[in-house]
Length: 111
Image 1 (spheres, rainbow, N blue to C red):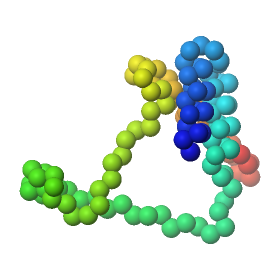
Image 2: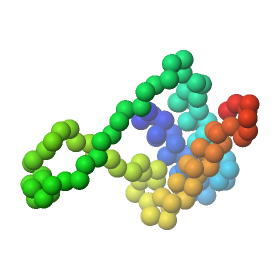
Image 3: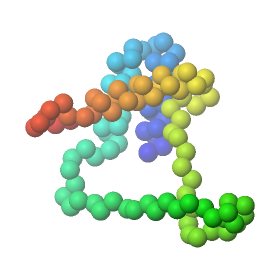
Image 4: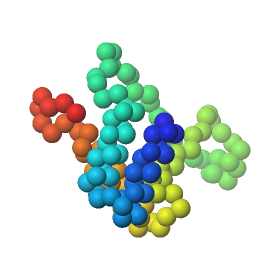
């Protein structure tokens, strides 16, 4: 997926640099995603994993070494790394438009 992320960032950079239109960038990103992610329904439904969130006790808050289980770190995906926040926001708009292009437009339509 790293290769696809690099391609997505490159397509978005072309837009941010003024070398391509918003629509062309969104279309290119959609094409990259379509090639990387299977959009066909799976044969057997996958049971979603559960994520259990709990409030931290005062002891856990004050001592991060105290743990009740595995920890994960979540961070936002940077689509325009090293650029200004306004350009990151524009990059997210392109990405959102690409996702809309992947979504079927009506009943019976396929992506």
